[in-house]
Image (tube, rainbow, N blue to C red; front, top):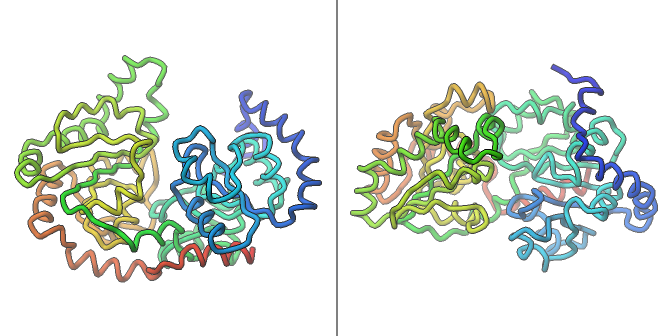
Length: 398
């Protein structure tokens, strides 16, 4: 249902007051600033990381073009060191960030919320108060129906997709004007053609659950622990990590398991008590997602878009979807992609099935099944190292 202006304005909370002041003060400065930097490109991913498409495009711009490009990130982020030597970097959410955001001819991000303040910028953009060009590089390949990305909720000038099927689904359903949705490929895919696989590493990487994040308070740690450990999410993933047959097999074959859930779930990592030398419960600051994906021999995930990155590399994966119905009801509705008919690995609903498949794949040297390689060939019609180049050219022409 379409929200009224008043309902959308309610997104702005009392805590956003400081940013309202920054916006008011920055606006006249930005008007003047734009006279001197007429084609400023502002890029970012999230406030605390530079591991996504915004970072890779920024790196490409700094190394291959003369564009006036600036990247925004929190200087206290452990990722700051990755980007600081590439070129100009500004503090995310700062007064300068506001000036650059208002002055930039092009705002570019892998996140819909990649702005100095999401609530205020939402109002500025959706109601046409700010009329610069905005490019959405995307966080992953879309398979579900993400209504929050419909054109009335974003007013993006460029929406990047990576396959024909994804492009057609977004173009036909999300309401963007003709030419706004383009099949260009994710910038980070350029890095997925150069990999050194550890043949003994199994990566388990489930996505997050909106209902868990929103319903379980972090203020009462005892209650948080109790509620989280009652969820299917905890019970099923914890059971897989402690599956006796799987543990016995990885011990006998010197296999390593890395358990790395979506970052939104990392505050719950402390409840996964796994005391085994072959199993690592990995935290966000210490591990890079793309590195894990590139070096792992096989992936176990659920509905996560990281499956697409892994499938892109033609490596085997297993979907573990024990809560499919609840996920569709409370997280993302089903889209054009049927995991059983279109997916790049078997769909399992029990830990026994997952273990069976991991053993089977290891016994065949982690070689992918022919059926999934055929699906790869049909789905990924763009498979090269020109993703950043295509994104750059499309943004340049906005």
